[in-house]
Length: 213
Image (tube, rainbow, N blue to C red; front, side, top):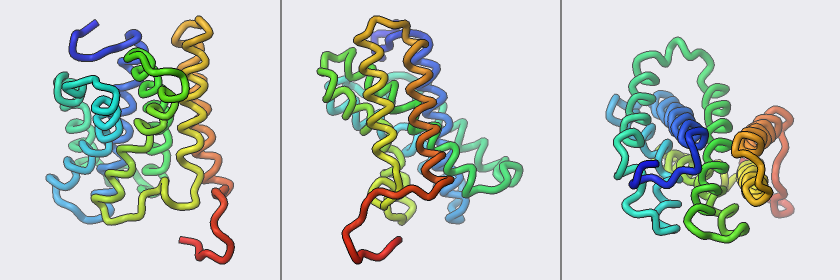
């Protein structure tokens, strides 16, 4: 285990890196859709991939944040941004891909975020909240930089799957099961719920008479 990053095991390292990569791709695709240059694509990719984890680390006292202490956390979103910039025409239908990558990143990050919070001594409820924050933080930063209302503030089902996925991970950690036995199902639950909500058009309740965005 590296001294700069608290990791429950190789599986969680892999999940974290995959989460950063897919979230960074979603940020890069948004930047491409907005017509930004290569610097803009890299900034949105980096911010989306690392924003939630950076905020979590600061809040739980994991300083310096992994995004600054471990070169892998810096290079993965840069690689994802470059891949997106140069090969985005081959990625096809962008809106659909942004949603898929965003949902996958949400699922991966809510789990790794919750488990890292537990590793730093937080209780089950705060750890689940930190997992949710890790999942939604990068997307919020991406949308604000891109001039969009953050997804989590709209009526779409977004934060709830992240919170539930994080709660499943926290419960699994306390049950004594292997990390693989509960982490992967928690990721699948969150990602699948988010994608199903998009497909079915599920929305959170809005005030009566409010306009749909």
